[in-house]
Amino acid sequence: MQQNIDEQQFYDKQRARTTIRREYRLQRWAFRLYLAIVALLLLCIVIGAIGIKTSWGAFIVDGSVPWKWILPCALVLGFSFIFTDTFIQNQEEGWFRRYGTQIMATVVAFDEVRIWRWPRRFFSGGSEYRLQLEWTSPQNGKIYTFSRRVRDSKLPVSGSQIPVIIDAADPTNYLQEDFKRSYDW
Image 1 (cartoon, rainbow, N blue to C red):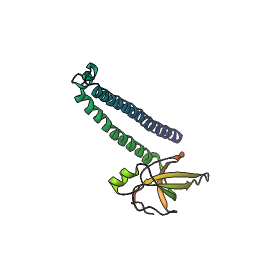
Image 2: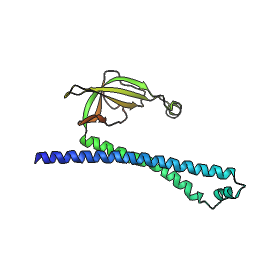
Image 3: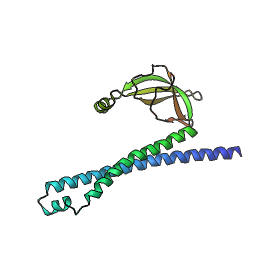
Image 4: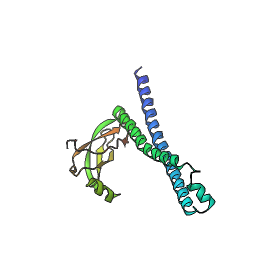
């Protein structure tokens, strides 16, 4: 009886994880399709504006193409990706809260993230860092590395312990959340 419960929990865990992965994959492909459609719309607008004196340019720019519906729909679809990403992330956090195991990883290094640095400094006034964490499994002695994003100006010191939620069956799979100062270290 206990073995059947454990097997059922294992299959439920795998099914939920597979569903989350499929949702992320579907979202990525839908976003690529959305970008292609927006690029085609912009191309049509540019071609229509360039050839406005011709019959085909006038057809594109005038009221024959329902731009007053196409452009707002494109904007709404674009904003929907923000909400779908939040929805999928909440599902992933729920999965880790239900099936994950919290461990204490050690801070070994931190690096400043230099991608899109000028907009971040302009809008937030601070830098972003990436913590490099290590944890040694007591079962097999293998060292696993994790990475966490930090947006605070106060960084943890090297050697401090930071909580990380992992999948005990696959420690390389962990909850990739932002580091917050509320942790005691």
